[in-house]
Image (cartoon, rainbow, N blue to C red; front, side, top):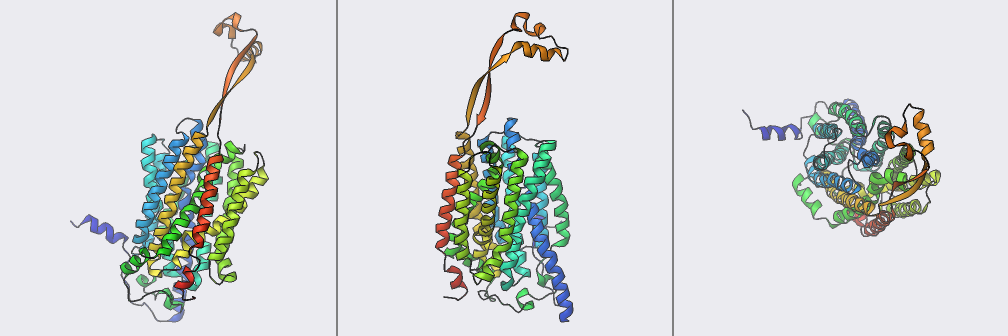
Length: 493
């Protein structure tokens, strides 16, 4: 009997380089382009569906609060557990992705996440929910580094900005599906289907990814993409091992600064993603479907920003990301502040503010959340760079969730209002259903006016908004510190 641990590692390890199957340029081109399209579409749509099994929890918060299953503090801790698991997994899985067969690595991660969502739909208690959602964060962390590494294997440096920007729409696709489809299922079938519905969708997607993703080109007998496109990576070191290149990532201060900047940006991003439905319902007075619609518009706007991010930087800023990151950082802060100041009940103003916020955030997630770090390291260590930045990003998101949940719970007030009820009217209404109220409470209690106390729970979102806006400002200031780092890495200064 063989070693099961070795068999497990061998299953996920990238394959050996195969000798070229043919030297016919036309055959190589057709084979390469077929795989490139399959890999690109699979990474983009597949990572979008990862999100469906991650942010679905934000949609079920209101009904779970109403049923008393969890309170806001517990929800904040659960959200933090996912994000801390995601942060740790992002670092580890980023380093593993540089050495993995992405087809197996990414598809099985999605299937594992779906299985956890099936379990959570049965409503375990707080402790099991906390542990399972944290484990879900670990499996969710496979998606982004897996996608980034496969893009670095199949697309050359000159293509990467535009391709990466288009790939970044994946999280907006996932957010849009979650906020619309999951909200519909929860409204129609109850909160449990906020977990079961996404799980079924992701099981199907995971099985498809297992067939449509691919390992490195060299494992298929194809040349490296830099040779195929005649576009060598200017900062690559062909003689260096992957381990050495990954260690250089850890010693690069610009990567760490970008990680801190992204962490602060993710505070605002996940503040809206994880608490936006509750803010729009409790703070702005919108229904669940209206809140889902507003956040779907936010997701579509974010999709547009992500899609255009690489085109904007490549075409108008000479592949430099610093200036557009600064400009759209200012826009993101302004729109989040506007959302805070808009009075309740303004559907179109809230929609406009979140649309602008989503567009700016889509660009920032692309730049600060990965592309700027990938620009300053070797392509063969792209997973490590994405892992470092991703770790910081989701530590920031995790701290946000716990802090925001605590602030929202602290801002919770119970308002009791006296209401006068005519007992004659109550007796008349019950009589229409064949019930005699006098037999239940006595004839003398069925006349006159009785005062009862009605309870209403109000939430204040002032402190969370100040927290999210302040973090956005700090993110912008940190991004300014790496203004010339990409130019230095590319030999421009």
